[in-house]
Length: 241
Image 1 (cartoon, rainbow, N blue to C red):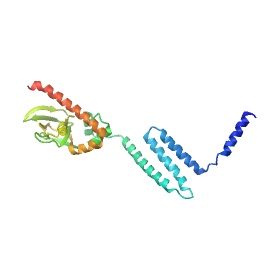
Image 2: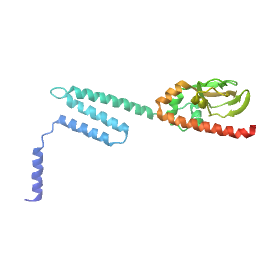
Image 3: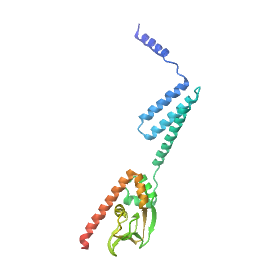
Image 4: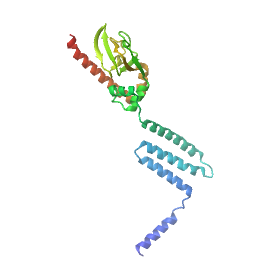
């Protein structure tokens, strides 16, 4: 028997051996194809969208049964709700970050190592203030309760009334003392009016505990700032002696 005829008979045999597919059964197959695709994509956003499509596609099949299959319907709706919530979060995180003029100046001066959205979340727990001449950011012999960064003006550092240094905008003020918990040996006051942001120490600690990745980056920034201040102090030492 010619080979084409054999193949035709084989195909017919397979066709008759496969059970007829009901239209509703196609929904199950299509839903599983969507689920398979969701496992194949690399993007978390697309994975969740395909998972939602898969869960919603198969629901009519459960509803059309002689006895409605409520358990898989309810669980499918639960998983769909969770995925839609996570999808909304992903879209929210992808929105462009809009910074005010003060925020942008602060970002460029001190926090450019952070991602813009991380930086924005940090700024939102702080408070912007205007510093008038003579306003103190640190008080000698007092414990530190806030961490500050000035973006303009001149901040003078004194000890026992003697001027020691002038901090440039962008320097972190109070971080070393906040880490040690000791009283300040110095006074930091505005020698010329400027603008600064202030974070309550307790609130900053809670925020960093909730954001471990951000806490690591902030710790690195603090260490770099302390190193710059130490280098500046050592360079001023011979000149003042």
